[in-house]
Image (tube, rainbow, N blue to C red; front, side, top):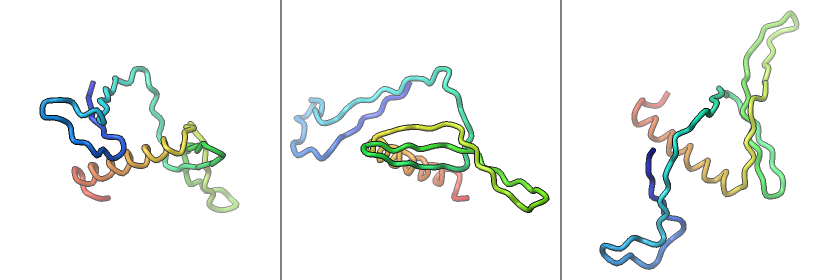
Length: 106
């Protein structure tokens, strides 16, 4: 299990020395038990009032007698609020920065 400290919003008051900052939230990441993993190389988004749907898809190029064809097969979808989508964007941006620092840009 890993632990993360997060500061929501902008806090004006600084914490007293030795006292926890009330604007910080401690987050404990629990191990992922029986969580299926899918591979996705294409994504589709759909928006409605107060929600965003992100569908992970598998795309592949196929050759047929009629020519080249790109097939896209939806695998799994995640429905979230716009605020959750913003947090996902921030998490992915941070993960890409860390990946690039460790392995280099590809």
